[in-house]
Length: 424
Image 1 (cartoon, rainbow, N blue to C red):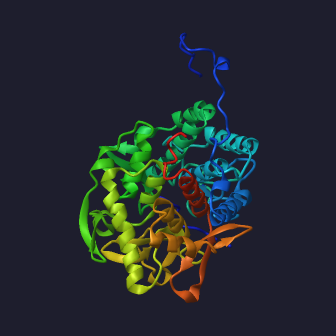
Image 2: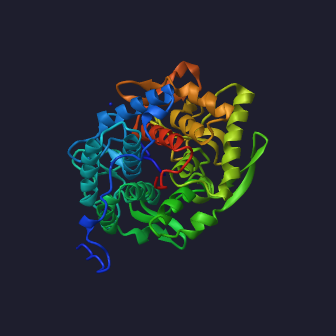
Image 3: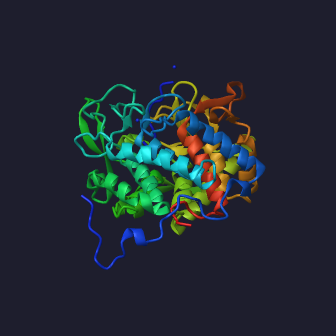
């Protein structure tokens, strides 16, 4: 879905209208963060967390291509992960973790790579790339020179959202960003108001498939809307039912693994990202409040701190979606193929940070935030989390999404709940 399916541990200028002044006569935009926004305004714990999360980028940014590894020291990435990387770098600049010159060097390198990114016949970014050579790869890190792995509408939507935030905050980057996006056949992402990707079927043939379930589907549709693409059904009319969990009612997608071939994951990530990046629509606020509430109720019932999310793991199967609900099961971590691994339930570091950013005065999110503060390696970045089963200890996988979302959440807190997409 939104992240790689497998992690293998040891992806002609337009002339100005005559009535506009010449660009040199206009005030030149600055790469400096707005006055009053800096790391010093955060708490001691948040400053320490920001510096640890930024270590991931210092270790895993490729200076030749500007791409960031999906997993620590693994030269492979997905399009979703590069969206996360761009937002992590943006947040780091806004927090004052790097100078304007350093930011300009990094972002110029990355955008230069995206402007010449190899594209498959579909004309949309491929699912995975080599971060060192920018060659197309499949999801198992094997060369895929013809782009036979297809593309993900959800992944492309996240990258589009990140590019929109960059063009909003740094107007000097807008022309290049719009040249990048102009190369992509975006109209292929939407059909009959729904999101469509391109994937291999069981016989290895590429076929267009509807992508996204309630939550992820809406997140992606909002990102596409930033680029004037209207996935109306995905945005406003997901096929949902109501289910009781921990005594509360939550919306769940009717399309599950049995009747559609894809799981109806109900987890934290899409709602948290939507809130921090563009803002939650009022229609989703009750769902988000209840989603946090049932996780708190599970803690009260079991005394197990609960912050579910999709995350990479430090052991097989290397990536799981930990859900409040999916495929008629509650509190179950599953693979993209729907196989459950109940012994690998985990507390998600990025979910804990993001929930606390959204609701900093809530006693439960404060407890989550305190629990994950120690889960960082000062030389590598933050771990994915901690297993609920104490004998497994910490989930020491280190990846771009965890560390980027930590930086996003700290910037969101610094901006006192103002979404990243809004210019300061």
